Image 1 (tube, rainbow, N blue to C red):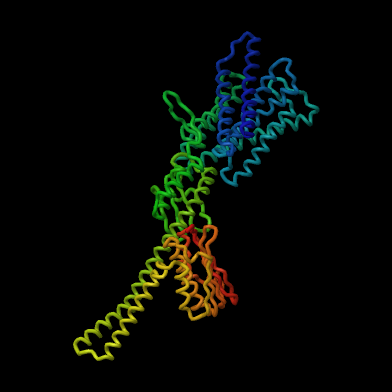
Image 2: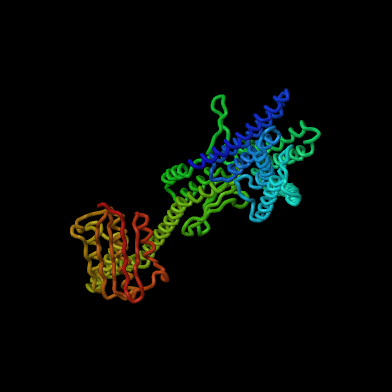
Length: 583
């Protein structure tokens, strides 16, 4: 609200000064029985483009400084024109006319130096231009101060205090004006260089600015050269000087959608369209829906890349994972124009140049906002990959156990039966074969329990954990909430917690050297929780790989749960696992 008010005040002040100069000029010509020249009307119309364009950009893109720069230029133009008009009006107070007319050099300097220098976002092209900007600002101020001190205000100068002050004022104005012209020439050369180095899309924008600055500078020279002996030509130069840049910027804004402002057609009318790109909220909303419709993690990454490309209207966009995996939307050509890392070091988002216009700070904020769902998609992709790898490793383990264990036992059993049939089995041989068959059956049951124990399917989580812990060679206690023994939960929930407990107690025996293990099962707050604590030697979790627990942690994450590990050397280990379960 404040930005709109400030923009309105500046635009109104500039426009009022331009119109006031027109009124003063019309009264002077009327008093001399002369018609008002058409060039005056043209000048007023062209000059009013500046406050109008500045107000448009400042209200629609208040975070960018360029619109405010144009408004300041318009304000100094209006004040200077009022002062110039008063200076040729009989009876006008010179104490007001002279200072107002002396601010016109400020407009010239801003118009010729800073408007092209800060194009298009209101920022310096690089830090190397800081000294240039400071020198230009000092030169502009020196020129204006010299005019104020000398009282030079058109046709009626104020008397100076003494000759020394007059000399200082004249030298200040002359030196400031000369440096301003030199800096304007240097700035124009820099603009041409930026034009030549810019990409094809940005070059069309810079072309209009280069042309506008050239016409404005030529108009300024024409105004100074013909002001005394060809006033009509000087007025044309003034029109070109004041209107060339607003026209160039206006064409760039509308035709090439600078600062995301374009033209739309509704029926037979043309309409200005602001915010042609979607907002951050709109992009995030659409992306959330797209991610829900994409079941595969790789497809989710592709949806993120496509959303970035569409939102920024970039030629291409890519999501790159930390392991080098890369998903690109569009055809990548050339290096990335903008890169934003995804939090947690999970990867990065890159995008190429826009099809129309350059990428701005607004685009960076949009890309940073998209980094959040991109991080979630990357986490999902990594989790899915780890789960697939874990499932494949488990499949191979089961295959190896069957091949090396049960299969060999069955082969030996079959061979023994064939031998018994062909030779006539003795009682001892039959007893040996019966014992061998029982051992094979026990091994098959143990193998099946490793895949999914029957006690878990039949008796539930508490009973399965108690059966698992009853076979441990150390003192183990299993406690649970009252009533939890008779409650059942989803198979994937019970399976995840069962195997987490199984892995934790196995680690306590194999690695920790524990003498006591305590297992606690509870259900509260919509969470089913399992805690395994031992009195073993403990370890440093940051320096030791979690191995089997890492796979189980991914399994719990996939269910919306989690796993916490608390351990330190000499203080035992506590494993806390939980999953959401209403049961």
